[in-house]
Image (cartoon, rainbow, N blue to C red; front, side, top):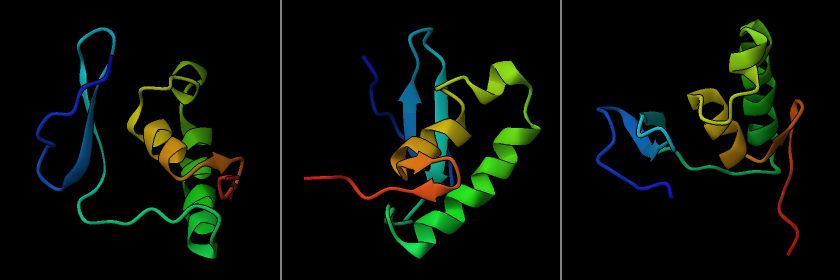
Amino acid sequence: MPTSRKPAQGKAKVKTTKEGKKVSYGEAGAKVAPGTSRGDAYCARSMGIKRELPVDKANDPDTPNNLSRKAWRCVGEKSKRSKK
């Protein structure tokens, strides 16, 4: 089960993986706004990062980029608003 710990300096969140590795991601104080133009811009930028990674890292759910993309609800280069 993921736990929260004190983030690395300048990072907003920390996730502990199943293997016990701590992964810091996000920007301290940043607000996530999925489904907005700002969200779409973030998803497009982070997709460029994802494309440059090796396949095993690009598909690893515990990389900082993929954890942030999950928070922004990125689907490809777009950010989706949650349905309620």
